[in-house]
Length: 190
Image: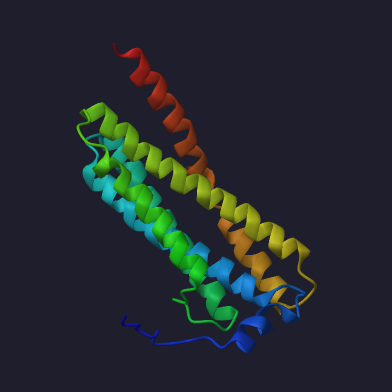
């Protein structure tokens, strides 16, 4: 079996140091933040793809806005990684798993088989909804981690990033309402 070593390996000592002053498990924090970045990075691509695939102009605009929001969140989380003295594109085992989960969601509409136009639109919206819900949950989790951190520069950095991410969740909440309305509308049609 061929094994390809990563171009950059972050030493365990460096990972542990991330959380030391904040009283946190630095390895876990690094994995968690890396997974957040991977989720947002892939979610931006999936939302952009949904914008290209939808036949509905209003949804296209929503998906384009989602792609932009996920991209902005990616930038904020990559900046957090850099402030934690990690590469902005640090890929942990948890982030690889997060990437695979988004990829699986993105493939679902393609693997569903024969689906009418309404079904495809519902699936695209479901994928956007699930990614938005994960982003909301991730924001809440980062906020909670920041809240339990001891006073330190790490805590300050986590708090600032969590507040930045929390300030722009209205679009994610809009997707939740859009999904509900879409399901009701689709159910009434026939």
